[in-house]
Length: 146
View 1 (tube, rainbow, N blue to C red):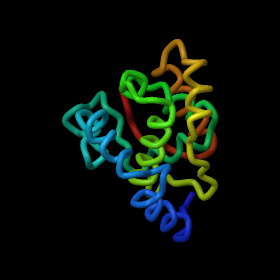
View 2 (cartoon, rainbow, N blue to C red):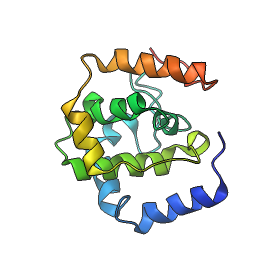
View 3 (cartoon, rainbow, N blue to C red):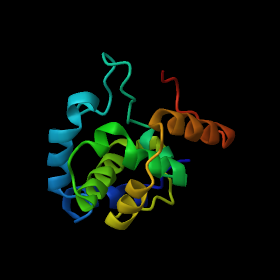
């Protein structure tokens, strides 16, 4: 699943200038997410924190993967509006997906975030394991994660 140069360039430009991946989304990530994921998108000293680099884009391929992203504890507890959450998730994907960026990436929007918030999983980690299994069945590995 290689991302085309055109798609990657468009996401990079959007991450710097576009409303969906705005400067504010980067600031929200810095305030709400980097404590665990770091600004590099990977925190090896915190083994219970999943890496974002070269992985996060794969979650956007599946409805349950997108549902998981909206409902992980750090996102749910970040006290962001649906629009702010969509912007941060899009910024995260644009910034960290790299090799995992699908050519068919569909940005999150406030309506989708609101929809998934109305249907939270009973157990986000069980949902992650389900998504990981579905991705593995598609030939996509997320690597190891406890």
